[in-house]
Length: 221
Ligand code: SF4
Image (cartoon, rainbow, N blue to C red; front, side, top):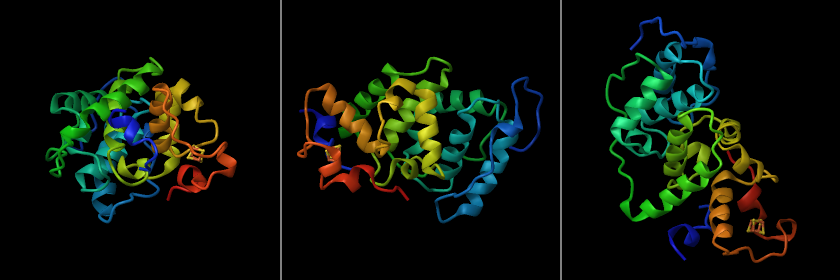
């Protein structure tokens, strides 16, 4: 059993430029910042929005970047990407935008969990939609969020669970389609890893009669 298997049962700037793909309406207004300093989150989100290039991942990445820069969520520095990849992401989704300071609240990824992150990335990329290079960044960011201890949408710095469900269905459609019972996403991903290795940690014959039902399927807020 490797790192992933052992975790299976656990819940574990402001100018308006002229970029051709820019589409300010692509980013919707936030509903729930999810961190104490929601004023700072909303302010950065509002700065990012006019630079959005019109891709569906603009909105979730704007939420994640704004939340991380305000010290919320659980993502490591640079959204868990290397700085060069973060720069590419920023230019791809918010062309011409420059952050006032690096998105680095001082959180380092745990090197002891590198294998676990890599397996999660591989799981997602196996079923990526193939519509955008953004899917690769998203896989790495979602895997980094899985290292947090809260609900995945909260650890990612999103503002509602529905945004996580939407991005999973959009970026990794075949994988997301297997979550037929709307299982909590972090639990679902680890369960996929276990099943791929032939490891079955569920002790009940079915979810409906399992005492862990609410841990796997309960509300996430
Ligand atoms: S609720 Fe279902 S998936 Fe979760 S531990 Fe029980 S049997 Fe397994």
